[in-house]
Amino acid sequence: MSTETHPTLEAALRTTPLVDHHVHGALRDDTDRAGFELMLTESDWPAPPGTTHLDSQLGFAIRRWCAPLLDLEPHSSAESYLAARHALGPAEVTRRLLTATGIGDYLVETGHKGDAILGVEEMAKVSGQAAHEVVRLESVMEDVARAGVTAAELPGRFRALLAERTVTAVGVKSIIAYRYGFDFDPERPTDDETVRAAGTWLGDAEATGTYRVSDPVLLRFALWTGVDRGLPIQLHAGYGDADVELHRCDPLLLTRFIKNVQPHGVDLLLLHCYPYQRGAGYLAQIFPHVYFDVGLGVNYTGARSDALIAESLELAPFSKVLFSSDAWGPPELHYLGALLWRRGMRRALGRWVDDGDWHPDEAARVVRLTGRDNARRVYGLTYGLTEAR
Image (cartoon, rainbow, N blue to C red; front, top):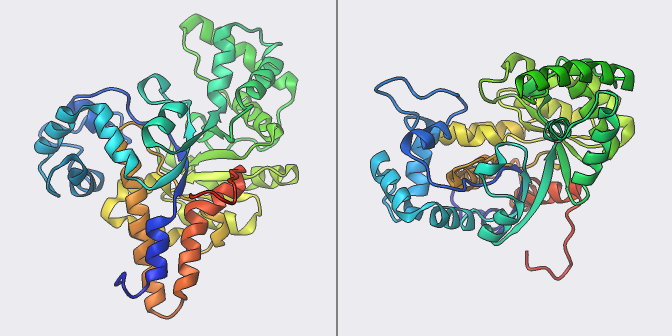
C-alpha cells in the first residue's frame, strides 16, 4: 500500500494518540543479558544452552525497530544492541522509547512485581503523557491477608480495601485465568462459602508465608466484588506464561459468566486472547458489554503480527476492539506494541481500501475507534474540547 494513495488513513495512523488500555510499567533498573532475555519470553526458563531468546520474532523486531532509537543501524547485532542499551542507561533508554510511542494514555495495571517497574505517576512523568491506574483484584486480596485478617472478616475487609484502592482507578483486572482457569463456577459465591475457603487459605498462608490466592471460591468472590464495584473489568485470556494451562484460558469458557454479568451493566475486556482471538471476536459481537484486544500477541508475533491484527477485525464490531501493548519491563515492548499495531492496521486496512471494499475515510475512522476512542468511552476518559490531543 502506498501511503500517498490513502493520505487520510496515513494521517490517522500517524497522529492519533493511542490509548494503551492494558499496560504495565517500564523497567526501573538496568539488567544483564540473561535478565533481559527472560523479559522477552513468556517462558520462565532461560533458552537452552547455545541458543538465545533473541532468536525470535520479538528479538528480531527489537533489533530492527528499536535499534535506531538507540543510535544504531537497523538489524544491529544482539551484542551491539545490548552494549548500547547498557551505555545509555535505563532512564535514557526508557525516555527515548516511551516518548516515541505516540501513546497518549497509559492504563497501568500495578499488581505484577511493582517494585521492579515504574509506577503510574512515574510512567506519566517519563512519557510526558497521561497515565491511569487499573487495580488487580487478586493483589488487593493478598494485601488484606498480609495485613492480618480472620476468615470471617475477609469478605468485608476486601470490599472495603478494594473501594479504597479504586477511588481514582479507571478499572480493575482479574487473573483468574492464571490462578485457576476460565472453567470456574460462574455463579456468585455466598459469604459463607467465601469464609470457609478463606479459613483454609489463610491457614496455609500463615504456615508457608506465601499469600498467593488460587482458591476458585476466593477468586470468584474477588471477581464478583469487582462486578459490584462497577468499574470495567479486564480479564487475562489466552497466551501467558508457564502458570497458565492454555486450554483453560479460552474466553469462550466465560460465556455463562458473561451472561450472568450482563444485567449488572459492567463492561468486560478480554485481554490478549491469542490464539483464541476469533472466539473473543465472537463474544464481542454477541454481547454488548464485551470488548477485546490482541495486545500481548502483537509483540510476540513480530513480523507476523499484521495477520493477528487483521483477524481481530474479522467478526467483532469495530466499536468493540481496543489497542493494548501489555508491555511489562523493557520499554522496547511499549514502543513495539504501538509500532507493530500501527503497521498491522496500515497493512490490513490499506489492502481493503486498495481492493475497493473500504473507503479511506472509513479506514481512518476505524483507526481512531480502535486505537483511542473505544477505550476513552469504556473507561470514561474525558478531555476538554480545546485539547490538542
